[in-house]
Length: 255
Image (tube, rainbow, N blue to C red):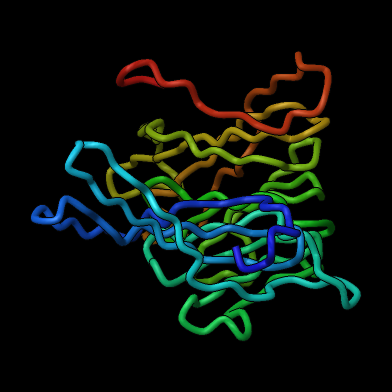
């Protein structure tokens, strides 16, 4: 780390769009990337490399390749709570911070963000970014303002949906496989009347854990008029304290 170890790492994410290069002759691979964000307002990129030794074990190296000042508030560094690569474009990174802003970066030119959404949209710090598991350009953003927003990177000026979850959003997990198809005629259906919906699991701090139903995303590009809103369909508050994490539990082919 080029910060001398003085800053806390607050978030990190793999680049799911990059493809590792494998050299079978040398028993090594390279090309994996990680983005990380820090308490001193910076965002950093890391290259991950692995070399297989003669003893059939593997050594992994993580090299920081680039770091830049990403967020400030009142002239001071702002905690960057979350970061992510954009699914579908390995050169785009997103970051969210305590300065009430979501920033989009081209990692080839990080002097300034390519896009920024600030306090005109977010009423508090941006705390979570999670890309859709299958659909490129679609991602969810959480904030201390107790709302989950769904964005499309290609027209990012306003969210597709905005849902209140009753607590500051700390983690967002898209359901990995449950994008069910129902049959219903309406503004958000395709030519066969099929409507695809899916679910998002949210850790909402003092609001507990919530499951959101997100309708019609598969047909979003075909028809941008939605007859259904994203909504909370289930909640779990038995912790009776802050919910900082949540995830879907896999049972073989089902979740």
